[in-house]
Length: 444
Image 1 (cartoon, rainbow, N blue to C red):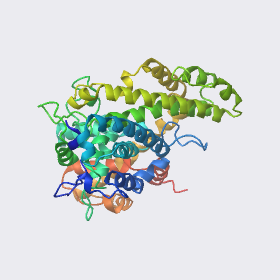
Image 2: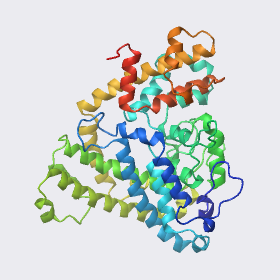
Image 3: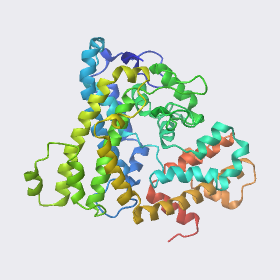
Image 4: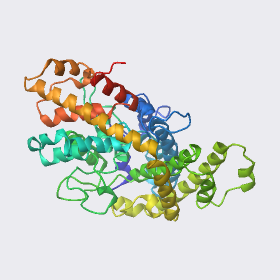
């Protein structure tokens, strides 16, 4: 893979190459990507989607939206610092007009939308959709789908749904948000289809990155970027190098900030903050730390230092392994190879014990399973009955609840089911709860 091709400014529908030197510096193409994401309805819905603590009543716990904004800030710094060094190593890029800010803008935009396809109720939302088709009523559709289509459903993947949102054609809107291919490439952490499942221990095989419905769009993107093909069996490629930075930004933020949330909520004792965070940085001024009056300020101080330390690590590891990354030989995430791996795992394990398995989280995840399964069943049944001309009056009524963009006729069963899955995945936590109550006959 080569950087000139990987930094493609092409957008869906372009008939000629966009040159960096011809870009308007006051509104650079990669920065336009960021703006389009910010103004999208899918991004706005993240303000009411769970990050860790579902439906929290406090004012400082992170949602998917605040998490995404923070990941974007970290991603921008990672991109700029890596880009500054890459321009020295590849002087041709500078002659073509690229700057270190371009790298920052690409990583920031991809980081901003990294969770845009995630369903309500956190990662349990993905599992709830999959379970409906694997062990729930949706399992009866298996024989009517191809193996790949069925795998898309039983392993419903927020990353793949994100690509669907970003690239889906609608009448009058070709190519979704029409983002640059460089940004889309950095967004795709797992550039493969859903089968074969985890064929290797390489990081790109951990999950999958596109549904069968977006296969053509995916292939157009990876071929334009010149991503290296991984396997001859099935569709599988190595990552866009900047996807490693997007992943690192996410890893850094959820590791440190989820831990911070747990401390501020009282789920984790504050004494653990100094004990665990001090292992990630040597720059803690204990006099300053103890002079801070409020717990939130003390944990915020530690969080800032820890994130800074991990950013340094991620940049160093990326630059030391640039050639391996470009060749597809770097088979782990950046933070899996950093010198703080053991300390990071300690923090994650403490978060699992005290936060992710807390009663409040489990109760809301259980409710989420029921809500998602019920809503899926109502709309999948109604849409299929309408297609088969067997729709009941109830079916016709509930279909009127679907937004206009989800009411198009689909000949393919897979397309109809995926339409419902995308609708349900796009619901915010609060709206999913209210919709479920209405469908259950509770209009209070």
